[in-house]
Length: 409
Image 1 (tube, helix red, strand yellow):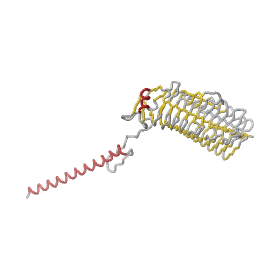
Image 2 (tube, one colour):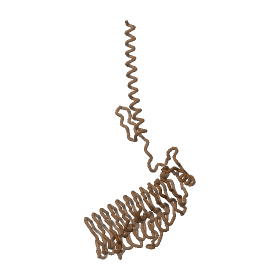
Image 3 (cartoon, rainbow, N blue to C red):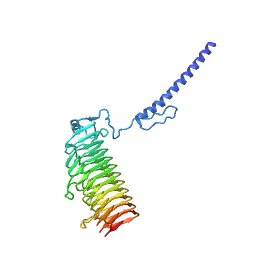
Image 4 (cartoon, helix red, strand yellow):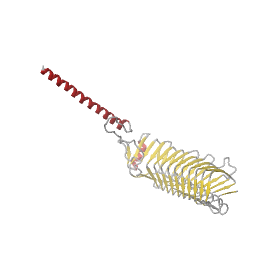
């Protein structure tokens, strides 16, 4: 009887002991293992564990621009010869990772859908005084690459005939003898967070060449620029961005660019239109003509929430000039300006509009502030045979020998 009772007690203890231990371990492993697996493989979100176990946080991030490490098995190149070979042999849709250093390239053509990924901004493509890249009928993305020393008649660094997207790229010291010191766009170009510095399109003012020291956007083409910087670019005739097509420029900065006229952006042509939003224009100079920052001819522009500070023009419109003087044109130039600030801009002493001048074209200016601008006539605004529609603006401290604030005839 005692023996049977003892065995019964041991058996009960064994069952209870094994069951409690086994169930507890299975529960802990399932909860932790399940959450750990999903947090590192399936989702990038932090998993909140409802037990008392530690929260597992995923430290793996998806690939991003500025990623200098290429994935295992990726196409990686470290020499010019390897890059040329990869562009020829890589399947369409491939990503080619370029290592650190300088790749000397002259006239390389990309004619398939491809992504070029630089190494954290330490990859340099140089043209040795020839154009660096030509983009054919393809979809191409270029990330984190510097373009230096390219030269051509059109598009010193890149001539684009496809759909090109640029992310975090630098263009410096490129030149075009005619148009597009850095880029000549003939189709669709998107520019995100890029820098354009010291590019040139030399030429004699109004000779027909020397425009778009940074970018030429041709008629019928599309340009989108976001969060980019244009500084110290020089054009003999017109602008850092010579805009003949459809252009949208947002959140970008234009500083110390020089041109004959419209040193930052020049929009021209009856089918051309520009939308400029949230940009800053500082110290740009039109050394031969009008429009220290922006100028347009027989086109349409919409300028919103921008800052214009210290821009100058030899002639009228220290910051903005609207030219609709050719009355035979089917479309007169028109500019709409709203929510902008104009400070210390200057037009020539014999010309009007320290901040803005319109010549025979309509212009609407609303809810903008004009302070400390100077000109020969109309320290802030000047209208010559055009049409000004003004509302909700604030003008103070502007000066001119003739009419200090708003002038015209």
